[in-house]
Length: 315
Image (cartoon, rainbow, N blue to C red; front, side):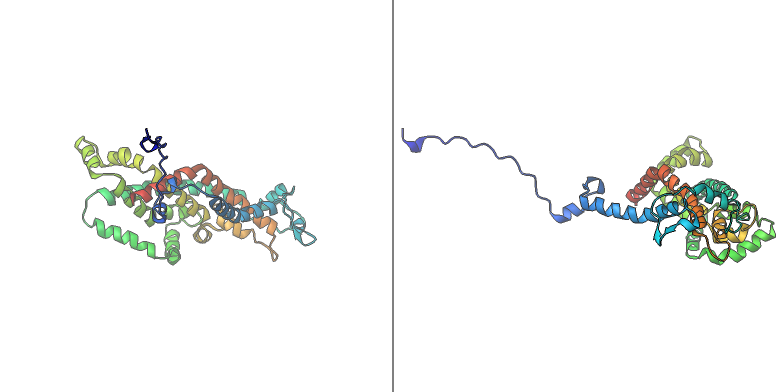
């Protein structure tokens, strides 16, 4: 038998190579399927550092006296032992070379803001979701025109209504009361719009019709079907309402500034008492006023991200 007639040994099959993906295909992947590289982590770390730095600096200054913030012209970068001293000063304590902050009522203003935020968030979630449900699923004459009017109010700056709002509040005797800073904020045009859009996309009409066939009233449909579906969106709207109520300054200064119902915004403004501002005192109040917002973000952060992602997917 000649060598030409010998059979060649079978070659091992080559392992299949993964298909090469072009750049447009990579750009079209969802964020969950895209691995994060070191550039992503470096960029996010830098953004986190820049965003957290003012809070850290305010916390450091709040632990030092005014004359010890700078040592030989160099700012202090580590915590000091005087936080309780500054806390006592902003709550009316007396110390040499410090003006009196007794009229600030910082602790009372802090508690007032917590009460205002709780009332505003509860009212906003209830009334905005109820109005959004009506605009999205109920049929009544003038519904679309009324909804467009509500959306149109978003283009009007809130500062333009301060004079009119003050006159109304004064005529009914609500100036320097809790009602002046809670009742006007119980409903927001953005909240109604956001709830309406979410309900329109998230709840099919067939489910509501089936509930009505079973004998459920309109309010029963709202409580049993709409509210459970709205939980992610309510998390987002609740955070927005809480931050807005906590940071309210202009209207709070006009309506309750200097009264027993003064909130945290006017209180921080009053910490600038005296001809020379005491930055250790101002930053102590600012740092304490920031803590509830940070805690709120940590507690509700996951729900907020879920609500935003659900809204993005439905859109």
